[in-house]
Image (tube, rainbow, N blue to C red; front, side, top):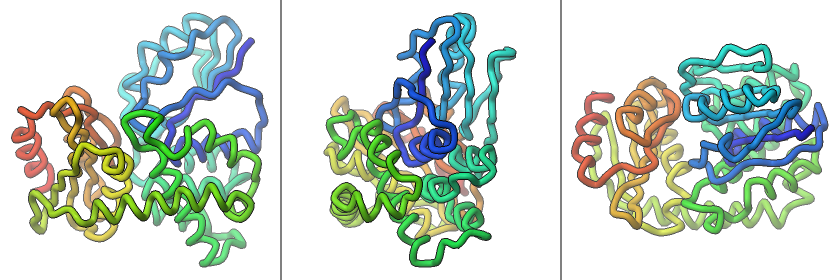
Length: 319
């Protein structure tokens, strides 16, 4: 019998697993990757009696492999907040799926554990740019305002680390970052004891964000703003957190960040207006490699000849 922990390589996926394994320790094979690598169940050849924990990856994108591992006799615990579609009916599947725009996987695991590891839950929720939800989780704890800011920064930096076209572009492999952090029940202790890791992420984030902020918009109106970043590792690393930064600065505006790819196509990050967290997943699912959630979504490979169609759809989504 083999245990597998399968999780998105961003802050939400990592912090969801941190909470779960601090509360319910289990030796398991780690299956993860860059944030956009979500077809992770395809990497698991499950057998009868295996136990799979799946965190923060779209069930819709993994449905066939989920059915395969269930048919093989595995037990699956599946927790996510992205568009799911049809959930297979099986006595061997326990799922917690909530697509509400103010919910993330770290928050769902925090509820599941009744707040047993709430500090890591807060980090993951901040990482998913759900500031109000994170602050709500911090109420009735002894975390002060300064510490809360540290947790927010850590969430942003862990999330930033997950972006890139491949593992080589990241500062840390997500599995390595999880293992480093898993030594600490309190993320504030990780920030202090693992200062060199925290500072490496912080420095990289600030450098890449500064480069993105120097880019002029392709389109900028009261309703939407669209930016194009070059085909470069720094641009791929920062694309998601830069999208979040734009959304936080202009909460009534929809935002899109296009990152040029070597094949001539685009990687796309979309953020719905923070004051109306709807439509991002619906917009991105109109395109073949698109998906996500209503507040934040993306397209992995937008053909260059479909850019005009995307811009038109973007304008219709946020008139």
